[in-house]
Length: 314
Image (cartoon, rainbow, N blue to C red):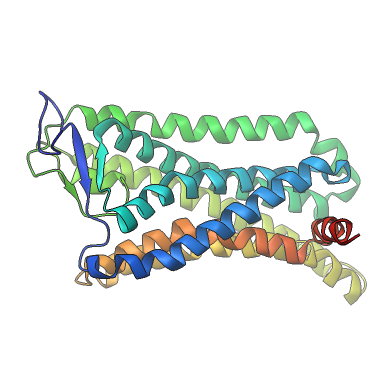
């Protein structure tokens, strides 16, 4: 069925352009994307398996890390397979409902990732600032409640989007100038008054990024103050060293967001493919780099992975 066929309210399907202006390079661009996706799958699956298999790793920090790994797996798998199908097979058609589902999962799990990073900051705050109460504060029941709260917040904020988009007529064509179904890219094709969608999308993004980052920064202010009060320099290095992996994960997640936001405002006349490549980088880089950061910096995970290779050699 042609992507131009229209039902009473919405198209049967959309047409994902890919990276506008770089269509002739799709095959070459797909190579690093595919490599990054494979690394993300291997790294995050390894983290989940290692944490699940080793009872010594069933501590709050590692349970939050397992949550982050699962979220990264879903985030990358929501977009990359379809993206590679566009680049390799020119399979650019996506049904209207599949587009809404992809958009829902993409934005929901991005919000969950932000919540888990905030929870990990809280974990480091309790471990360093209230070490004697660590096990009594961060119980398994609290960790489950934090996980459920992260899911509930994301689902609650993102559930309205598909219903808001279903009510529009799409008279500006069916070609989405992107590699995946992103909320604002779909809204641009809609007719009628889309101000509420625009405001809602910006408000949710600002609410999540600003609020979560604010609490993360506050956590590290308290952590830094507690670390500086330690008597020896060795103790300071050891205490702050436990935060290095988390800081790396925060930087890998939020740096692309900040760069993309600045580019949208400073370089509005930049070619569309620049903004799309930044958006893809945001989706691919954290899932690829986070397992490397935690695998290298966290001794317990590193030792467990190395022990698995040693068993194979024997």
